[in-house]
Structures are given as C-alpha cells and as structure tokens.
Length: 93
Image 1: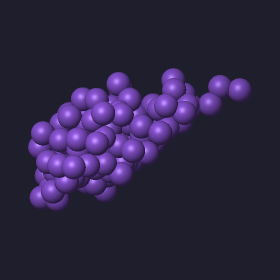
Image 2: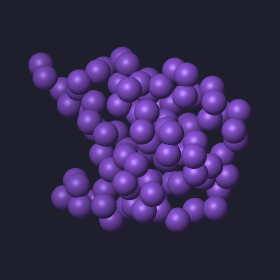
Image 3: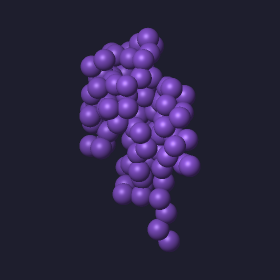
C-alpha cells in the first residue's frame, strides 16, 4: 500500500537528524510540513546551536534538507515547532 509520512520537527540538529533518517529510509513517502527555510526564518528565538554539531551534520545531510540545515548553521539559532503550532493545526484541519 502507498503510505505517506508527514514530518515537522524542531529547527535544530535533533530535528534535522530525525528528518534526515526518515528521508533516507522512506524516501518519497516523506513530506516535510512547514519544515523549510522560509518557516525557520519567520521564527524568533535566542537558543544558540553548537558550531561542531553544524559542521558534522552538513557532511551527511539529505539533499532535501540542505537548505534548511545551511540556514540553521548560518543563523546559529535553534527554533522549536511549538512556535508554529497554528500553521501545523491549519495543515491538519
């Protein structure tokens, strides 16, 4: 059967790691929901991410996640999915 998986997570390297594993394991069955550079850049946060984690993740990232991963690395800020709850609720409604 055709199964579609939807993913949205935190805009940090934990969230990127989960999305990366899903995309490599399930490929085209995965749709990223509001998990993109535009959404990330619309969120305000002051939580810093580690440069070491950024560099390690950039080497093994799925092509579909490259832009958002580079945006997180450049900005150096983690953002959390709770910040976009209204958008996510709109998606599932």
